[in-house]
Length: 378
Image 1 (tube, rainbow, N blue to C red):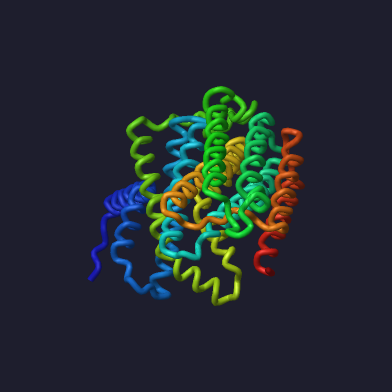
Image 2 (cartoon, rainbow, N blue to C red):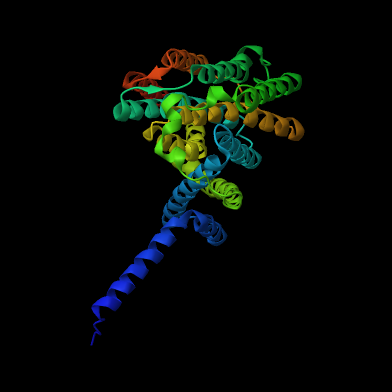
């Protein structure tokens, strides 16, 4: 027999359950990394279809948890330091993933090149195009500080040419790669350019990267910033969540390569998948920002990710390759160089007026589709 509770007691129990349920939902970003670590500990050596599906689900949740903690840290530190923290954290994870795959597979000499090139194309055409299209649909026109975006594009064009295009013409024709001196110089030059950009972004011309005019008057701008202890906890959980992402991605690397080979896709598609996983936290954060009419924050995240991908990942991988004697091939082919140059030129034109509409977003997304089609059809 069922016992019927008095109406008042039943109402109290319902309210208590709802309160506990809401608190558990509000704390889910804190316990997702713990669940991910437990799942990693229990993963079998030989993955099955069920474990691969579960790993993918936990990977997605870890990405969302990383986005949440990054937003807490960004709200505490303010722009543009908050977006810079996320860019550096994600780049550390990207470099770790590339190095682990290179160490385990001697045939991964082109993986850094494929991943960096894929990241630039996904950011310039995919993430930027999506943000401009969604922002144009929701807010018609959006505005940003022209000086900051131009500075980022200037450094990005120099880095992309130095790392991805110049090796095709300056590399050793026999080894099809940079010499040790050329590789060391490229790493040093990339790090110098990125360090100078960070100095300009955070100290010398910080106002170039702050939301213009009404951008500072968004409703979330007036929310009370999190305390220092909460921001510190979120920073630690951010790195833990990103570490879970890299470990889960490593577990999926072998099944991923087998799946790509099974459907007869080129090996360069592995770089696309790796770049997509690495850029997922920043992509979600940029999408949320543009929906709140904060295009400047979205562009800080997108272009900052592209710069960090080259300016930090390439020097790290190059240093490891020089120390371990690994082969490293950086130069892209004429078709890829043409698409890269077109993407950079379209980006300069799209951001040339300080405001954007859905037209620029549609153009960038068409370029993304062209890039993916050329990979699949090659």
